[in-house]
Image (cartoon, rainbow, N blue to C red):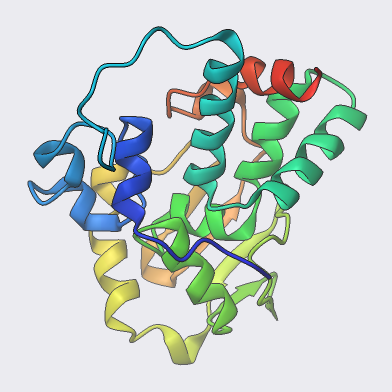
Length: 209
């Protein structure tokens, strides 16, 4: 599947927000937002006139896509799934994004970023309910047990990430058992548990035009 291969820090600077795309680097003084808090490119430091409603909606969509590491086609399919489901479309969309296996691994602390979590999944280090799953977009469900397979528990990156999990915290819809290298999906994610500054209604308005 196609994926973004450019510089991650440029994405954070473009959105003027820490998207936590590079793990520990985002918590250090090496973070690009800390050093260059303006948009990338030749005109990044220039002041622009007030954005239109469409531009605000577009920037919100781009921000959420970048947070979860998705391209337009896949993100649009998620929106269509959310729109067809019962309930509030914007909240349905965030629920689907949070339930992705790569995001769940990141939330549990097995990976320092979602991109690293995707790599961990693709390299077949992860089990769901005892079965190997190597699809980052796999949707987890309530009651699922996600674990690192036995032969992968000595990987330095996984161990380091688990040691640093207290800094980020684990959301209440998940339960982590560090000593067992596993986590459990206790419930489906609720809107209030998503702490990133996301205005999902702007995305709904954009796609509803």
